[in-house]
Image 1 (cartoon, rainbow, N blue to C red):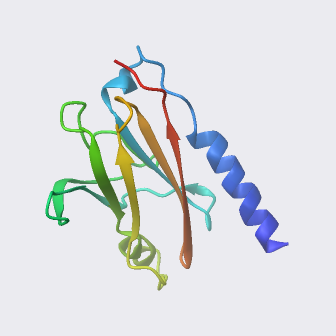
Image 2: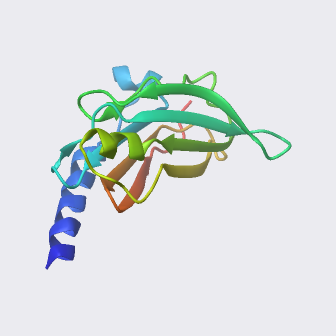
Length: 147
């Protein structure tokens, strides 16, 4: 029964998070949007530290930016269209600091989302994450290639 409740919250979160971005909207200048939902409280997870890395030719990760999720559980200004070129990227969510601020001792120190971007043309990516102290789930909404 608990699984069904979490699953329903996850589906509700997907519906909330997975809005397509029209090409002429103000969000079209933000090629990568990160959204986080706290499954325990059933609300956005604010102030989660986020780091964006790009894979270097030698296999190491180059830090591109570091910011925090806003009060609405979103982060839009992580990169620009000019910086977000074809390649392998990693989003690191500092989930431990979020849960510890709420007085909980989480299992994971951070949640990583590693993905290839723009390999078939320039696209917009919306990465949604559903958090609990002992698990996380991610999904991505990726636009069709745009010019």
